[in-house]
Length: 321
View 1: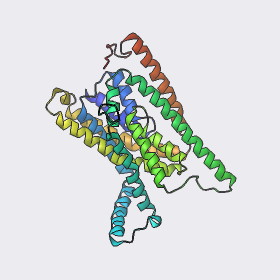
View 2: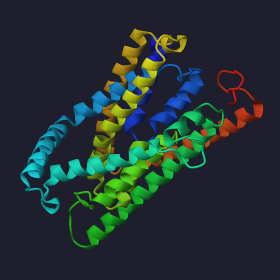
View 3: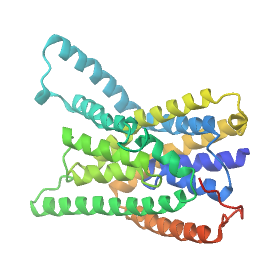
View 4: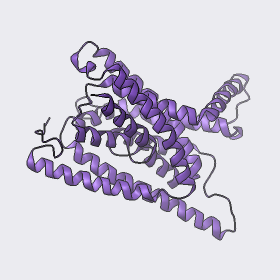
């Protein structure tokens, strides 16, 4: 992989990690088009995750510091016996809801009954090793489009009820409850399994369906993504270290890795800002249309490739496994 290819993939990662269009799905698409095999480039995947992690931390640094302060205060309340669930302030409530929202991720490591020890985390990797994963990505993008549309409609209905009630306040609750966090956490797990199902889009839509204010749901989604992205980077880093010394780990040079990481970081920063602005202006319908059209296009291309037996872009024979 050369530097130009690394920068392109970094841009794709930065944009799609935070815009509701699926980073895994778009990386799959662009790798397919460019004929780049990422399965052996684990260190490069880690660097892309580090880039997006830095981006979200820069945007939300004030909230992160507040959550750290809330964590210290929460420990103090617990050890002094003054903790009361119903009396948590906004930051402590958000911190607790983040912890609850992360708990469903452990389901990804639970073996699926009757699947020979395979867990949820392994499914995406199994699909990626098969040519059919391209079509699966297309259907997952369609699912993303549907979820975004449902979330928008839920907010529109809430806004109409608010308007009829004579209030000018933004619709939706400003605080999450336990069920909100669990539902959003489970949705995040689904996005981790299905390539093409947007994490930010699906979790935002779930928050909107649960009646959470859309900006609060988006902030929760992005901050919830910090430990999720960090965990992904650590897991891939562990796998890369275990494979160190093999030829596959040397496919991407250090300059290309750094270039990809910087591209992901810069583009990711502006992608978060863009999405927050579009959500505030109610202009997220564009993502509903985009993911639907992209999903249909990928399915059509995938069917044509399966019929011909060749990659439509590179002309290389397809591999089945």
